[in-house]
Length: 163
Image (tube, rainbow, N blue to C red; front, side, top):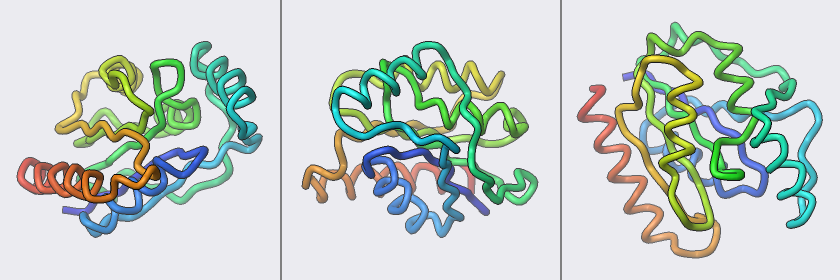
């Protein structure tokens, strides 16, 4: 199984999870970087990031190297912003034909549900439901054993389902 982990991360939680997943799946890692970054800091992040997510914006991305024909599985990762996925992932989905691929999703949040986020990603992609989904709560906050256990289970499930 040839896999790619495609993700956007503002504060590092999603990047950490993406790196761990890519390592366990021996997958290519493809970070998404908007041409104009989102401001860090609690108020700025929530205002600009939340507005951008709520209005379904699709920001221009820095160039990335991706050919969907090379992969059997695509694992998409995002932080949860305003209950949905981060806009750079929307841009990636719109720029690439993903509906014929096996997909898995993971999202990093501070708590609460990721169901709406996952549902909206699947709706944006089209008719292909994800083969597996993973919710992680603030992976950088030091619960490494719990994060490792969740990611190991997620990757084992993907290996069984996709091959």
